[in-house]
Image 1 (cartoon, rainbow, N blue to C red):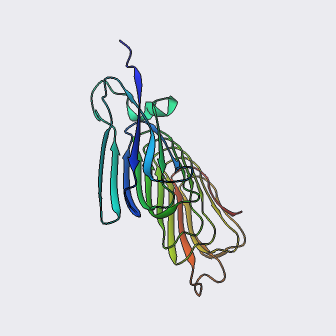
Image 2 (image 1 turned 120 degrees about the vertical axis):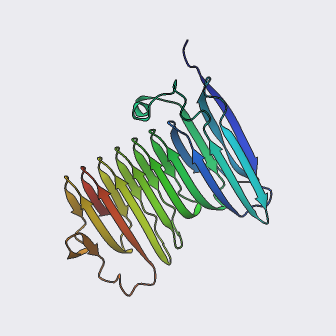
Image 3 (image 1 turned 90 degrees about the vertical axis):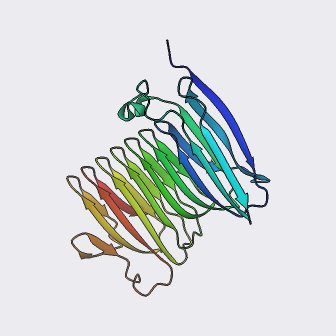
Length: 245
């Protein structure tokens, strides 16, 4: 008997929240996260697919004192009838999650094999930790981020990270693939220090950044800049590229 894919929709009201911690675990599903158009009185909304035998994804939310904690987690993790993670990238269920762009968000996103696409443009994000065991990872970070700590990691797919403009404070970005290519794009004029390594592929860094040791490159004004970003880019076997846009 076929394991039918079902769909559930959700919507969580804002209820005065100005900050939120969002934890998402799709198991082997593909994931897309982006801002809610217009924001309004909704904290988060979306569409969550799941296998009929798997069961409905779990959703919990706690709110108080202007802060919300939202958890979305796939049910049935580890059951023997379930697809193995490395089969996920060929086509499994989809999760689409829309977040209120006016809420300051701390986001954790995980898939055990699906593709992860995070379009955080126009949002306020303080922290991002995103990983997938084998899928591709595409991340657009917000403009005007302040002291942002962002990590995007995959076990075997490709990683692309677009850093937003107008960063303030000390920001860190880590992009890592076990075997795929890793590309990081930086707006021109940002003071950046880059640590770039690959086990078997090529390392390509925009010549605007001066090489200071075997794996490190930085902008001429990095040490004295009040607003800066430190970037670590790594691949076990693929090419690594850091360029300006």
